[in-house]
Amino acid sequence: MAWYDHPRVANLLGFAACAGLLAYALYAQHGLGLEPCPLCIFQRVAVLALGILFLLAAAHGPAGVGRRIYGGLLALAAAAGAGVAGRHVWLQNLPPDQVPACGPGLDFMLQSFGLGEVLRMVLSGSGECADVDWSLLGLSMPAWVLICFVLLGGYGLWVNWRRPAA
Image (cartoon, rainbow, N blue to C red):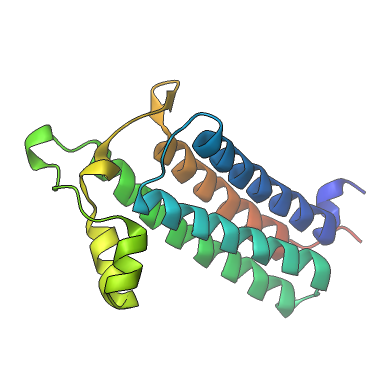
């Protein structure tokens, strides 16, 4: 039997991938000096949620419908993260004259506004979210995170919806 025939192991690998993404985000912030914008922080929260779901699926190890529920939750978390990352990529590709003005920091928004208003303000984007401070192979960090969300969401569905070998 291959590793992917063991859903617990496969989900644990998904958790490890999410932990690796978060570790690199912290390295980029503290080691490379890249300050995260509010959309970056929301993407980190989505990666954290995805990682927690992978870890819960690995620890719980359900069978049948339970595995499918975890697969659906993983796909939902990945889709939410992909939506935020997609919005971020879209903002980064706007013409300079259409980039929104810079807004207040996330800490200030959380202290001054309700959660619904903070979500609306962050998802509408701000000028600092349009900056591309890092790229690899021509893709910005949010573009890579978008790819990771798509891959991890598909992986979570595949691992938890496929029939394990007998």
